[in-house]
Structure formats: C-alpha cells, structure tokens
Length: 346
Image (cartoon, rainbow, N blue to C red; front, side, top):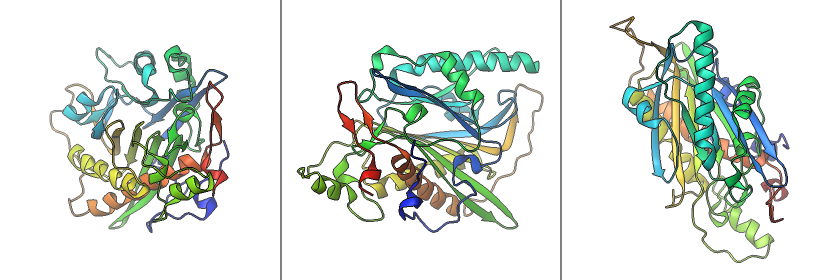
C-alpha cells in the first residue's frame, strides 16, 4: 500500500483534535490485524478489530449497531442490539466468506476460553462484509480459518490502510477503496476520551464524490474525458466505531447514527444497493459473563455531553473513507480491467 493518507495531500477534515495515530487504535486496548489474498483470481482477505487484550467473552463490552440501509449479510447484530454487548472480535471480509469467518471466530474464542478457564456454551461472533466481486472471484471463497487466525495474530496499533485485508478488493466511488481509519479526542471535564472509526469502503458513484465541498468526482471524469452521469450508489460500507467514553448501548447507537453525516459529506445518499452498516463498542464499562453480579455499577455521560461525540463520529468517518482511498493503489480485475487509485488525480 502507498502508506499515504488524505493529510499528505493537504486534505483536512473537520476541526476537532485528532489522536496520536489518527486511527481507531488510539482507543486504548484496541488493535487491528489483516490477512490479504492477492493473486490472479483474487483480491480479498479479512480484517479483524480486537477491542481489548483480555478475554472479551468473560468480560463483555458495551456495544450497539445501526443500519442505514440493510442490503448486507452481516452476522451477530441481532444479539448485539438485544443485549447491548460485544463478546468477540469484529471481523470484516467479503460477502460469501461471512460464514467461514464466523466459524473461525468460534474456534478462536473456544480455544481462548479453554485457556482462560472460562466455560463457553454459546457465542455471538460479529462479522461484517462488503461484496468485492468486481475485483475478485468471490465464489471461490478463498478466505480460510487460517487467514482469520493470522489476522488476529498480527493485530497491532499501527496497521496498514488501503487495499489490504478486507479492503483488498473493494471499490469506493468508482476508485480503489479499502480499509481506512481516523480518530478524534473528546475532552470531558478533566478527562479526555477518544473516538475512533475504521471503514471498509465499497460504495458510491464517482460523479458524486465530494471532498470538502469540491466536486472531485466530476473533475476526475472530465480528466478522463468521460461523460458525467449519475451512477447508482451501491456496494456497501462497514463502519466500526470504538470509544473509551462511558456510554450506554442506547447512547452508543445515537453516536453511530452520525457516521452517516460523514458519508453524506462525501456524496453518498445510501442507495438501494448499498449496505451501510455501523457497529460500535465502548471499552469503558465491562459486563461480566454469567450471574456473578446481579447489580453492576456503571459510569455514563449525560446526553448533552454526547454532542462532541456526534461531531467526532461524522468527522472521523469522513476522514476514514478518504484515508482508505488515499492509501490504496491501482488494482486489476480478473478480466484485466484496472481500478485506479485516487492518488493519480490528487
């Protein structure tokens, strides 16, 4: 991958202060790992977000989800929304590999719980997806359990962006998309919290691409000497939000909804064929598994305090998508068509 981000091209998003890495891993304890498959038939893979270092099944995290448009095959969100907790890593992959990745997360967590002496009789793995059939022979389902384990093993704070892992085969606004991330700091009284976003970008038409109010997509089409026509907004985007701000699952869902504002600023209108899915978790309050505690003490910010988190979610989502575009490089489809990276035009 190029390693470049939107800031390297002079693109500034919003006015809030960023975290040290400007990635989701600025939230303490969060790490991200990839496994990439790239050959003549495939541009695909898996990306795993590890929300904490300890056993997340025995000590669950507050979690929520929100679906702007449900043209997707994500697994695990029913229980997340019912119970408000997350108990596994979050894995992202391609549409037809969701079941295999789900199975691998079961194997990983079963082994982890056995090593930790934790009894596990049920599990709710969370897996998100985008369809990368444009750049990969998706029906081969090449992602295996070993790729999932490799992604978990490689998880770290400073991770690659662009066409890597689950972003290896994605196309965003008609250009090479991928994995992108950003973060914002949230001062509250004498404390400072962090909110980070990671995206798997695979949505949108080129003509609609807008950066800081400029019709960049239209300009690219003019440079290509192509007619400016409105393409369908389809293909999907997964948005993962992490924070250490103490919030309830209801408050977290309110925050997730604001990711849509970041997409709108870039030109998305959440079209019929686009699965626009948000999954979030907070590391602040941990929920012990089982019936060891009948009453749990929890910290929670006031509703008015969420204002900064709303803005942070919008800003970080917008920047994360731009970072996914800027970090990506040209990719070639199995039939030889080249999907260009935005860097050629920036």
